[in-house]
Amino acid sequence: CEILSLEVSEYSQKLISLSEIGGMPMTADWAIESIINQERKEGKRGN
Image 1: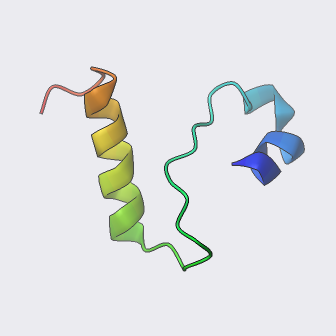
Image 2: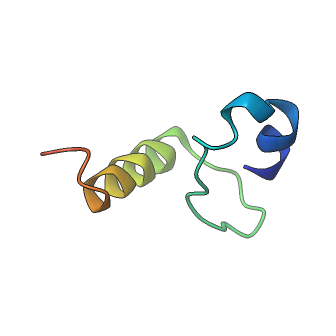
């Protein structure tokens, strides 16, 4: 998230950090589940 904030500063306010995963590779499934869970917490997703 920090690197993207520096590289694409016009979108930095919209970026959120999902988790600290300790340097492990992130899978697509993990990313999707993390985003959905975060949206549910914020009330952006009704499912």
